[in-house]
Amino acid sequence: MNFLALIGRVVLAFLGHMGRLTLFTGTALSHCVRPPLYPRLIGKQMIDIGYYSLPVVGLTAIFSGMVLALQSYTGFARFAAGSETAVANVVIVSLTRELGPVLAGLMVAGRIGASMAAEIGTMRVTEQIDALTTLSTNPFKYLVVPRIIAGTLMLPLLVLVADIIGVFGGFVVSVYKLGFNPAAYISNSYDFMQALDVISGLVKAGVFGFIIALMGCYAGYHSKGGAQGVGAATTNAVVSSSILILTFNYIITELFFGT
Amino acid sequence: MNTIPQIRLRDVKKSFGAKRVLAGIDLDIAKGESVVVIGGSGTGKSVLIKCIIGILQADSGLIEVDGQDVLHVPAGNRDAINRKFGMLFQGGALFDSLPIWENVAFGLMQREHMSRKQGKERAVETMAKVGLSADVAELSPAELSGGMQKRVGLARAIAGNPEIIFFDEPTTGLDPIMADVINDLIISVVKNQGMTALSITHDMHSARKIADRITMLYEGKLIWAGDAKDVDNSGNPYVDQFVHGKAEGPIKMQVRR
Ligand SMILES: Nc1ncnc2c1ncn2[C@@H]1O[C@H](COP(=O)(O)OP(=O)(O)OP(=O)(O)O)[C@@H](O)[C@H]1O
Ligand SMILES: [Mg+2]
Image (cartoon, rainbow over all chains, first blue to last red; front, side, top):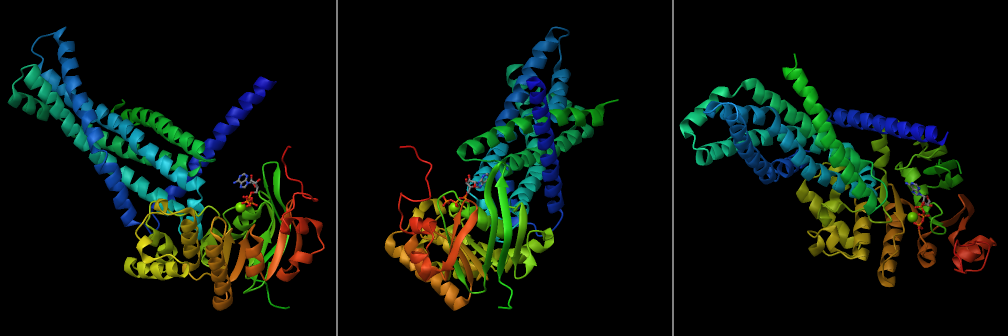
């Protein structure tokens, strides 16, 4: 009996959570298309999300490109020698389709999602969000919308940069460690680059950016209690956006490439 | 009196889960009147104000502002009502990502689409009224002392010249001299600018000074209301105990000895 009650409670909590999240998403989206928007705040968020994430995303990308080149070379060496074209191919396809968006998404979720949740959560528990309402400012418009717009726009740009840096990482390992011909590597990469791969990666990035900002804001907005509540909100934001990123990564892949 | 009170509460109730905080509040506040709510810590004074300004949703009852039901107002009209309000939060609730002057001018810039330059001028003027000099304008809230933050909160509340102003413990945490300056400021905005004020305080000196009427909240009800000058001989043992700050009396504190 107690066990059933426990299950019931968990299910109810989950449904309540989903309901709140759906409502939150709907409200946020509806405010995205209704003026006034705050260009100043959108710009500030874009710099925060885009510019200040560059180092971390760039580092992730360059090492991923490097390790991809190394792994695929040693991996292919088991089957056939002279896999110069294959290495370039593997590097560019995996980066543009998968690793670029997913790794950038996860890194930004850790960096930005957490800080959004912490900032908005602190504003919630110190009544700053209530103060916004009394000063005729809609907290969704002021806090949530700029972050969502900036996240959705900046992640694709970040991923584009990550793609380029990642390919460069693969190039460095291939040329300086594996002794490939640099000109051939570049032309191979160029030949194998497919518009659809790149586009699917950028679409993923846009969706991931939306998810990161949405979950960061949602967790912060609904945080309760003091410092502890804000801490929990931060964790929730990172964990839930990471899981959603991996889930949607599969769904979008299925939509683009599934048969 | 045939005029409608500016704020009218009838049987307002609010609970958090099983915990009943407001158990039926009736209160009328006339235009230009200054009412002070006194009451022990945790009795629901802040909750009462939050219900009136719509931060919390009362469970039942009637709340009217200028004769308009604000409990069941469509979201689109909420803003028009909010414009009438100014609020000093108990904890300040200053925006810590913005400099002081932007905190003070926030409502002005949002509502009246005032330029940043104009906003800053107005902010500095308002800050002068609460005894803050122009050189704190560029600081961030975290760089100010608690009492200074309180005054910034006050400046922000009165900057937009609201019709109705709510002060949640305006003098707590201030030295006695500054507390009296704030008392005078509250009196002057009420008397000179005709604002209606609803204040919460524990500070009986301040209450006597700023209130036209005082009312006491105890166990979810307003158990006494009367003219400020009558508070010392209210004839109500609860009020007596509170006003004179005695540990002995009908109000039992939840402490173990
Ligand atoms: N958002 C909330 N959720 C749950 N309970 C709350 C909430 N806000 C207030 N309460 C509870 O309501 C009661 C009254 O709180 P309130 O802040 O109104 O007290 P107060 O009279 O302002 O006290 P103080 O003088 O210490 O500020 C408290 O017991 C508090 O625990
Ligand atoms: Mg309070």
